Structure formats: C-alpha cells, structure tokens
Amino acid sequence: MNMIESSIINNKKMGDDKGYLTVIEEQITVPFDIKRVFYIYGTQEDVRRGYHAHYKTRQALVSVSGSCKVYLNNTKRKTDILLDSPTKILILEPNDWHEMYDFSEDCVLLVLASHLYDAEDYIRDYEKFIEFYSEKL
Ligand code: TYD
Image (cartoon, rainbow, N blue to C red):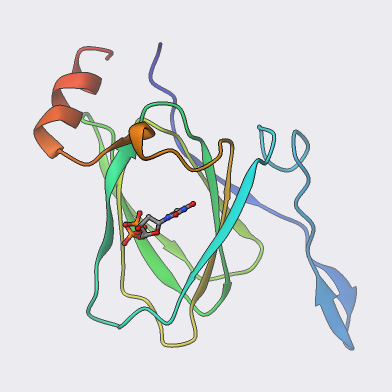
C-alpha cells in the first residue's frame, strides 16, 4: 500500500438568493463509494478530538455549518486545514493521523466514510501509527 495525499475539493454551490444547495455523489464528487455517514456537533470549543489514523477508511469532511480546523500528519508533512464552508470538502486519506479542533459553537461536521464502522480499522496509538506508515514513504 502506498501513501495517498489528502486533498481539498471545492464543491459547487447551487441555488440563488432564496437559498443554496450543494451535492455530494459517490465516485463523482468524492473518489470512493459512501458506506457510512456521521456528523459531529455540539463539540465544546476547547475540545480536540480524533487522535487516530486508519488502515483502510477514506473519509470526506465538510463543515456544513460553522467551522473547525483539522490537523493532519502523514509522518512526513504536518498541516492544519480550516473547514469553514459547506462547499469545502477535505478528502482525508487513511494514512493521515488527524485531530479536529477549534470548533465553532454552531459547527456541524459532516463525515462520509468509505467503510462501515470497524474499531479494528483505527490506529489510536501514535507510536504504532508512525511505525506503520513511516515505512511506506
Ligand atoms: P470516536 O472515534 O472516539 O470520536 P472522536 O475521536 O471524534 O472523539 O467515536 C466516539 C464513539 O462513537 C465511540 O464510542 C465509537 C462510536 N462510533 C460508532 O459507533 N460508529 C461510528 O461510525 C463512529 C465514527 C463512532
């Protein structure tokens, strides 16, 4: 398995002054089939969550309301992404350790995932993450 670079997609905003609509379709807007959807909301402002990477699961993150930041670390580059628009999609690859933080009070972070929930697909131990992914660079 090779490392895959996470990326940002600028999605289309449709509608008019009366209101807007944005669409996400599997294999069209996002590069995978969508097996699972969940959303993160009501997160306290000073809370940081996530702290894991995955073996297989690819995800698409969109802040459909409010904003939050995502720290990404794929062992060779570390970056912080601001999700502050319902049209901005972060394609989060399994090889990125991620932490979400700076949630605005009204943040609703929508997550689309390529796999069903499986606790075995999580790497929650940072040392194990470094060991597993640094050899794939
Ligand atoms: P967790 O991954 O710990 O959230 P975070 O890292 O953002 O704080 O998930 C919180 C709880 O929800 C945990 O008990 C696992 C459960 N969960 C599911 O049952 N299904 C899912 O699809 C997800 C994402 C979490």
